[in-house]
Length: 196
Image (cartoon, rainbow, N blue to C red; front, top):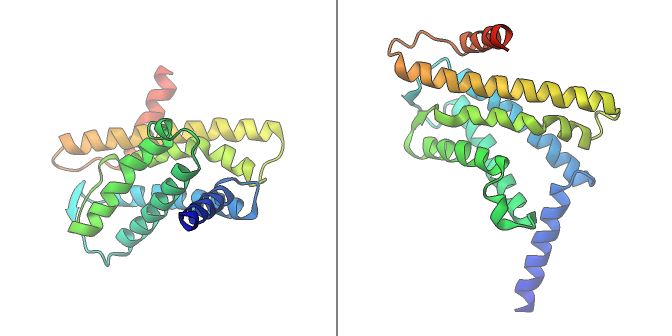
């Protein structure tokens, strides 16, 4: 019994070390999370050139990159769950909901060889915390730059997520698949600029 308790204590200590950016391991994990989020968003944008639902091979580099990113996100989810003080509230946090929408489709794609673009655009909402993460790894130190980066990240995050939603709805209703993701980005900027 004591041995199980010691293993559990070590796992929790390791999870705490890598989840807080005040330690070296935590800063490295934060950098990895920033990088993986950007890669996953780029992968989503790259996949918008194809049909919403299509058959893929597991050896396809874009599928492998997406799978690696989502395995990392799954591992990060488990670590954050271990560290979480309130386990029940953890399940309904925005970060957890984003993971619920993006991790299972990648694993299913690897398992059955068929992909659906679906709600993967929700990963763009992870950019909401991008400014705080950049500050946590001490890339930004001034309060003015931190405020500017938070505002910019919020704008880009909502812009990409809204464009992803618009793209999904437009592609599902239009069988000719003529709309492009960048058309959706442009359309949303035009709507924001004219209607505010």
